[in-house]
Image (tube, rainbow, N blue to C red; front, side):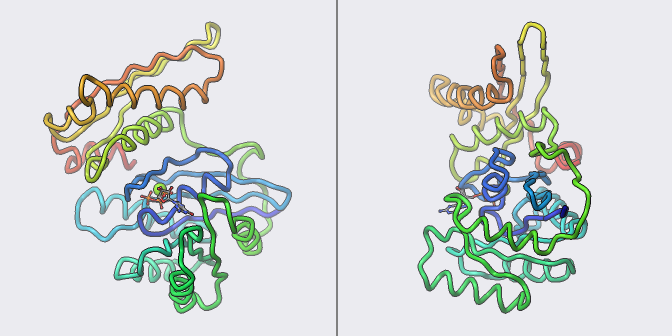
Length: 293
Ligand SMILES: Nc1nc2c(ncn2[C@@H]2O[C@H](COP(=O)(O)OP(=O)(O)OP(=O)(O)O)[C@@H](O)[C@H]2O)c(=O)[nH]1
Ligand SMILES: [Mg+2]
């Protein structure tokens, strides 16, 4: 049996979380069209007759001096050095610039084997595709350079073949049926954050964090109760989450409810959502340390 950890690295929105979900066949990591969705290391586990690959989804590496971005960069950098190999994803629709160069250098320096993927093949022109491959080949002359569509599940088998080629023999790290190791509170907060992000536009997703205040699970009565807070940065932003006559928060609640229900099939779920302002939390060491622990 083969067994390896694989860090998934790339710029924001390159499709890292999408590929982890497609490979595991589960909703392990939240996704959105807004860059910088993932904020933590999120494990997605894939097992077949060849062995086990433990994917570590990471925050998209974004060059920025803001405190929260530096924390997210640290999460990504720490993942580079403690995995057996790297799956480097690039979005072929975007021209590589300084940020992509920085990441390519970082990946090289990590000194572990690399599989490089030009993602979004479903919407790439052949010129875009060749340019992206040329960029990757120039940086990683001995690595496998592939094209894939993470969202359409195209070229993913080839990615797995190349990763398994690089993996060493070893014992499985997780049960063969496991697909993630996230605790329940984290999963709940991520689901609510995803549904909140999907109702918002532009910069707003970045001002949000979700806190689970309480959960109660009564297995006998098959009842689940979740109380969560959607935090924004200023009082004035609460209205954007709540929406006209509460329409937005109702939608967030409905969509979150449906997805949380899937975690507790057959149980009665009560989901209590509130919106609060936590002024300047993105600069608060206390909040950041809690979110990036
Ligand atoms: N057309 C197309 N869109 C894709 C593909 N893969 C991902 N996307 C879309 O690209 C956007 C970003 O995908 P994510 O998986 O959230 O990207 P990410 O790299 O995890 O982003 P961060 O967490 O912000 O770093 C989403 O809207 C996805 O649906 C693909 O193969 N083709
Ligand atoms: Mg992501």
